[in-house]
Structure formats: structure tokens, C-alpha cells
Image 1 (cartoon, rainbow, N blue to C red):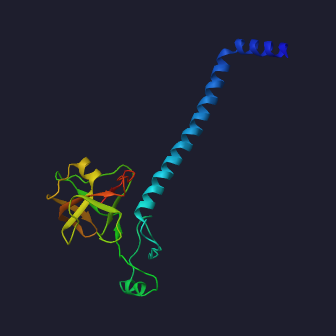
Image 2: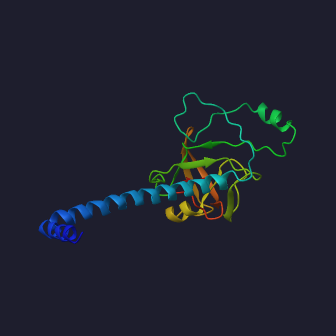
Image 3: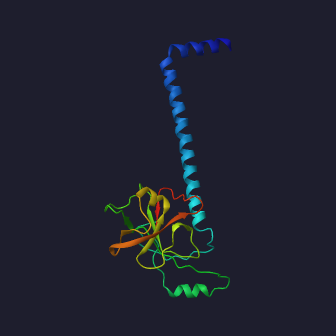
Length: 196
């Protein structure tokens, strides 16, 4: 046993560079594996929190099926009469007809569109009943020509409540008044998304 240990030490000393590079490769490989697990767990937790906070008051969601859906988050339109049908189902307390889009882009006062880095810009119609957004400055939109935006995006892009900004959507470019700033959930954590 002693002879093997001596031989091992002698070989290590004779091949110091190979020993160092092998050790470095093992440490680097383990570091990459650990980092990937930490990153994937962190992302999973972030998106789990977003989903939980956005639908915490919802028991059932009815969506239209799009055969050719270009956006994973976008749903098709449902017939307006379905709202009355669902309201008549036993046990249904409240129904909230919602629209969402990934194709509406706010434009800053200098004419540049607001951009996110990889994350989408989420747009919803405002509802007072089932809503994960809380107004933290100003007020909620109450009619056409008004919009609210998340406080993180408003701070980052220097948007001011009471000012008018253009929004670019399917109908072209239109001017809207920013009437409020919102917070998503408890911590306003949108993983880089902008919400309006």
C-alpha cells in the first residue's frame, strides 16, 4: 500500500501539468452542472410564481383553440354568447372576459418603441374583478384612449402618469393617455416582461 502511494505521488509530480489540467477540467465540469441546476431551478421558481400570482383567484379558464397560433401566450377569440352560457353553470360565482396580446408596443415620448430583452410585452384589457395587477400610482383605465403600465417599465422608460404616449398595435399607431402604474402580484416580478 505504501509503495502504491509513493508511486502515485511520484507520477503526479512527474506530470504536474496533466494533473493540474485534469483537476481543472473536473472542477469546471462540476461547476457547469451545478450552475445549470441553479439556473433552471431559479427560472422554474420565477415562472411558477408568475403563474400562481396571475391565476390565484381563477378556478377554471376557458380559451379558444388556435390552429395556427404564432404566439404561445396568445389565445383566439371566443364567442361573446359563451360568457352568458358559462354564467349559467351551477357553482360559477364570477366570470371575467379577458383579452390579451403580445402585439401592442408602447412608444416613448422620443418616438422609440419600448423594448424588452427576450421577454414579451404583455397587454391585457383592464378588469376590476379578477386581476393580478394592483394600481400603485394614478388610477385604473376606465375607457377608450387610456392605459396603465407596470411601474418597473414606467420607471425604466421615464413614463409619466397624465402624459400621452403612442401604442402600436394591429390597428396601427394611436395616442393614449397613461392614467396609472401597476404592480404585478406581491413583488412586481415579471421576469423582464413589460405589462400594460
